[in-house]
Image 1: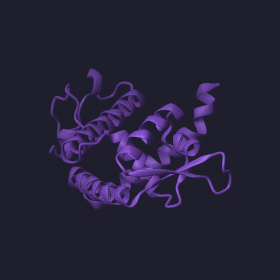
Image 2: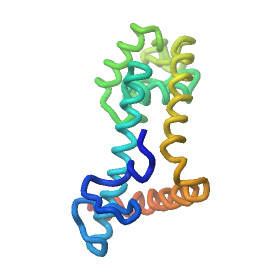
Image 3: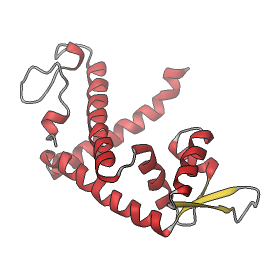
Image 4: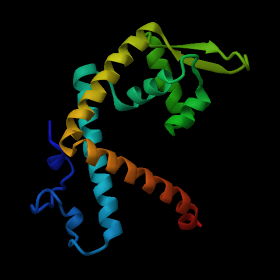
Length: 177
């Protein structure tokens, strides 16, 4: 598995301690674009590792893992509509995934307690067991990938990304409008 320096360097990197040069931009040019490209590069590379590991070690996909992760947070289950909103996918995608996971015995559909016309999906005992193993491995993969940062740098990066998330959230409407 790649270390963090390798992980977040783009193909156009020219050295310099892993700083990288996304899209061939000079160090002092287009800082906002460079930062965005760096975020996308790191995210994509980490996601590729996770997808590969899920496929080879658990014969599953990242969308299935994400689906199970959402359900694991809600032991009583979620309405299909709510699940699709959390995963930011269409209801059709959720229906297809649910059909597969029901057939495998990992989730079950039950009538919603509050609205009998609605269906809730929840993990079965088998689904909980399967997801628990995947979640443990997932965390280990991420710890391995991010360990070279060190605890202090990881906390600082987490805090800075949290700040960025707030700023982008506040400014998104201005850019869209």
